[in-house]
View 1 (tube, rainbow, N blue to C red):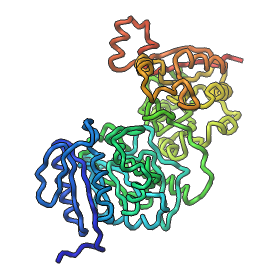
View 2: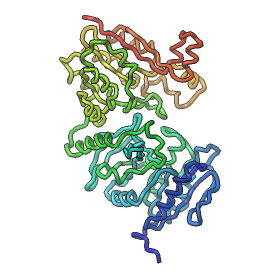
View 3: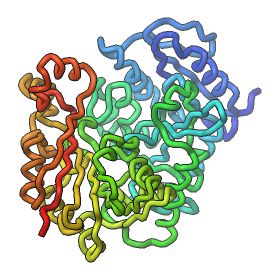
View 4: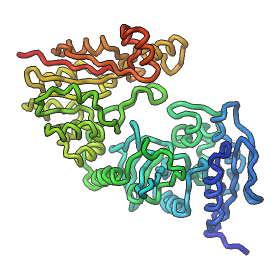
Length: 475
């Protein structure tokens, strides 16, 4: 008779669309089949798959949308919720190991009843460098979420998507009772593919916490490695952030409020990236002879690092104190304070230039912030600001067509976004005592062709973003 470790019964459901990932699907099946547990494996797919007698294949989409396939696992979990101790869902290229499961079981006993141990996803480069593909764009660690549970330290990472999750029987039951689990295919802040794997956290009353003292145990491999070179953060840089989080847990000091990087609209439109690439277009507007620059809303510091290489002193107010540690590793002087505290902290200092990239449209009082910037500049100092164009033709068309996610765009209190345009940004700058010196229109994709056809006379319609340089009036 086969002995199963602790008599644990696990139901695994894997979503596998088409055949492109079949080699990875086989790897997942082999992994689960080798575990010392009683494991039943179900594969949901849009097509029949010959996976052997020990794997159940359920064919069919929950809706006509092919992206709805991941939701097929939910009905299976609901129908079999009383038959298993653990329930695992994953995409067909995301590997959960015995080590991951053992860690989950150990940690779950430490967590509060509304908390679930979650996973980050990693990829491995050709040189064996590990990258965390979960960490990109505006997603970040919530410094205020750091907490101790038992002997371990946890933190919330704002990207709930890990392409997989594990629930205990009690957690699944509670998710079902919440009314947010057994739902039709949908999308919101995440697209339909992702929403199915994040609903336990976004709709069922649970919070996904990452155990940062055992991060390797709560990291799952993304077997395709397809995001390397496109997105994701190298492990050495993740380690810097984790050390910052552990310092917070150790010191227990108050944490300055982070700068808000997201709108209140559904989806991820017009967010401020924590991992913005070096903005050479902004750097080109920094005058020759500049010696001191202040960057407001600094992320990981690629643009600021380029200034350092030109022997320019750089001070930065970071988006939060965790990302600020990454900027510090590049040699940037970081002021870990809120936007509100910045004027007092920097009082008496003067800068030749200020950078504000992709942030003004999210600030509650942009003119007030620009006034503070004015006071921090030398006479004839320059401010260089970039903002998205929310009067872009595509935005106008979508609003005219009644897209619900844009219906509150004109109401800042509801949307969290100022409807920025070239004229609005110029008006803000002028109100704060600047005169506009230079405007660059960032036009991308097919809009470049339209701009060419209109001889550059309708750039306000085609520009995805504006970069505006303005000088301080000499006193």
